[in-house]
Image 1: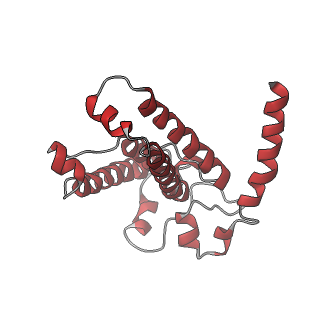
Image 2 (image 1 turned 60 degrees about the vertical axis):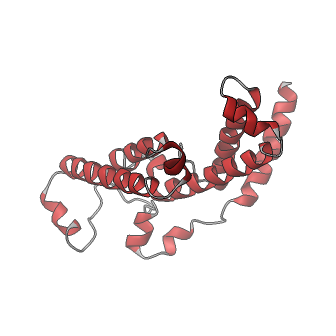
Image 3 (image 1 turned 90 degrees about the horizontal axis):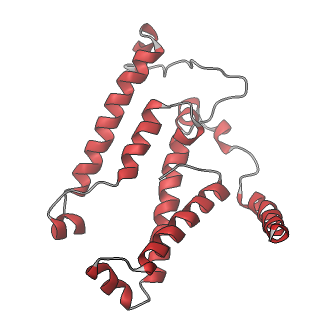
Length: 188
């Protein structure tokens, strides 16, 4: 079994490199845009210079800890408020269940994005691509499970039905693998 694992690992390492960019394209973007995507020039150390226009230029007058606190609150509040506003509009969740729905991973993402800003997982590029890849993989795999005519019945009945749990496990594992392959890992 260990030998099989090594073969798979070796094959994956060989082929995963073909899916990654040859160089980091973000270094050629304008400075503000490359910073937004999470790129930091080699040798650049925090604290970074604020963007050269208000209100960001005013940030040099407060401590970095206070800056993070302010942007954590504003960003988390605004982001979750926007997601809840979208989810309360005419969506299937609103029409069927008569309640707004919010995916719990968005709360975890808000904490990562706004509170631990130096973490590689918290970079906007990883956030956007990670959620897109996860949504694609989850939808694609669920569509495969929907080919089974009993799948809808199992969901409606409730209780334990193995194929619904297998769907979730395969979807999550595939999303994590896809994020790793493209180099944009973000825990959804």
